[in-house]
Length: 272
Image (cartoon, rainbow, N blue to C red):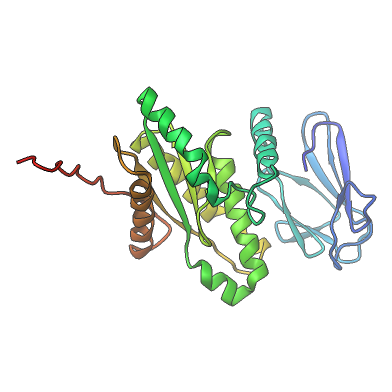
């Protein structure tokens, strides 16, 4: 939900409100959020039953700033300020995640992308001699999330990691659901160094996300492997190097980025 200057919205359990929240602790018309002509955001509690809080403090009326945590009843919300370019990127990513044929759980490209569309990207990069890197984003202790908090929280975490990852890269960088606990991100034109920087950004964003909205005291981190494709390297081998680097990052303490080892080219038969 976005708000621009001189706009307001009502939050409540009633579907007639601009931001309906289906939760028993939310009143029918619970609160109002308004933005004035200068961009100042203010929240007003509308005599709700369970109250409105900003950063843990109950309020009747309070200003909201970027990063503030707003609680409507027991439903947590967060305010972020985005530029128009960032809003446009957000909209394009959301549209892409809703494309038909995507993985139904995450909205990312399905694993069939690896045997079809990826070949075209590899061929194009080879033909134009531009670098091509991959990130293997593995969710740390993902199986434990489902065991401790339930499968519904596990599904929410996977979807959240997918969206945060897609938002952290360029519009045309393909993001693929590679397995139950990992995502593959392809970065055409990215050198090893620039891919490492992207991976570190994704790691920080996911680690800093407010996962407590999904479950109390929930913390999610990722271990990310980075591999830049060598000339004529087999696609399976290249992806395998990224996955191996992600496993190494997890074994080395989790919540970190690991660059894949570059394998030497084997001499052809008959070469001394």
